[in-house]
Length: 276
Image (cartoon, helix red, strand yellow):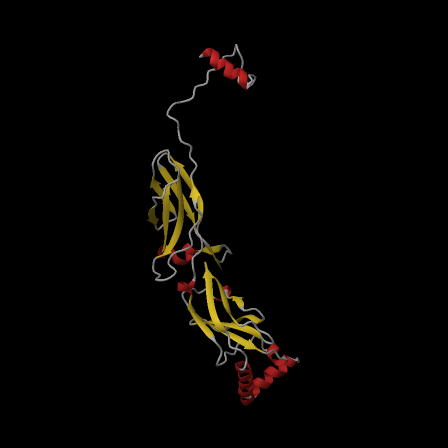
């Protein structure tokens, strides 16, 4: 390397004592900047946002992420924001992760090492177990059908940001497998009496009163969790089956007099009066 970066890297490798002095200086400088506080993780369907305070003025932030089973990585490098989308760094959902929020004053030297990770003492951090953190978003209703005295509902799993090798998105069913359960809440239209039924699959088929309309919604549950067990509720759907009349309507056409297409309404009314 004939560049400034190459010269600096060779110098740091050959002079170990200067190496420690250099990073001690950076650590001391950063420790004098405001420490990030009120650090929070928020995650829905494993799309995870890290937030903190205060807003930077004459400095920037860099976020560092590490799992018990993974190395430190930088994300949102030199940002002036107070939030960072860390989803891509947390795909091993059964791992426990630590985030460092690092305040930094940028110098030319620090810009050169922007992609190197050097965790420093005195920087605020936050730990999280992803499998327990992520809230489950709203499930969808893929299809529903009311026939005779049966209501059939097919639930659509919420998708996560993570992908299979073929680039299709993983659903929460792919993540939680048999730990996922759905509950269907249903009631007669214009009634307050709510019933519920659970299923380990995405399909429901329940017996209902013939000729009545029903409203319903679904909600997912992660059975092994103590917190964040329930998902958001799906939208409420209602069937629109028309009531069947017991007395059939019979229309008799008298070709001699007129047809429905040609008779004015007044003439049809007069016709039925005369025939009656």
